[in-house]
Amino acid sequence: MPAEYDRDALRLADIADRIIDKTEESEKISVDDMMAAVGRRAFGPLLLVFALIAAAPIIGSIPGASVITGSIIALIAVQLLVRRRTPWIPRALSRLEIDSGKMRFAMEKMRPSLQRVDRFVRPRWQALVGEPWVYLTAAICLVMAALMYPLALVPWGVMPPLLALIALSLGMTSHDGLLTATGWAVSIAALGASAWLLL
Image (tube, rainbow, N blue to C red; front, top):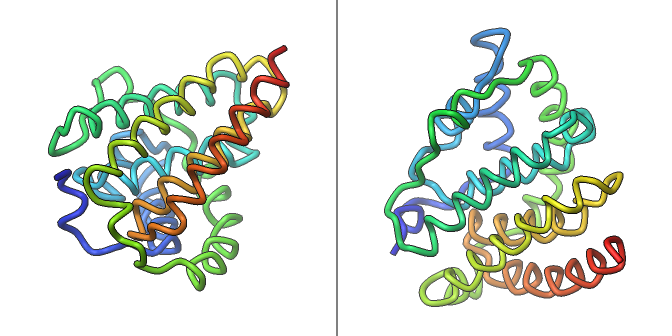
């Protein structure tokens, strides 16, 4: 079983706080810095943080941001599928940087909403976040990440798969099987919405 599931569930606000704290260390924050902040062994939180970054207007509007975050999400999902114990990101991606001020602004704007979500998310239906269902979730995350490539050409077209990715990774992070199942349903809706946007 992936290493993440040996860890305690993380609160969303805690993840935001860790990123905010990391932005105070320098003027730029790298992908590697973000991985260090949320935990290099945690698949769910890493998927979640990059999905949230892509969904943040101040970050997502940067040209190429959705393709980069989609690539990172896809890479993490593939590693979860092949049962790698810890996520690995190539140096070319891990060294990519973004302005710390923009990242801090995005996380601070999101934090109140994440705190509200934390009130409703809790460990339940945990069979759906363990084997074998975690691999179904990883496969769906991979499909959603792949959709971000063509949808990057559509203004905010990446939002349907991002909403699915946020629900799925949040379910993994909080060990909430009900939310994971909701993410599966949102993914089906995202496929339909993506087809409509691309046709």
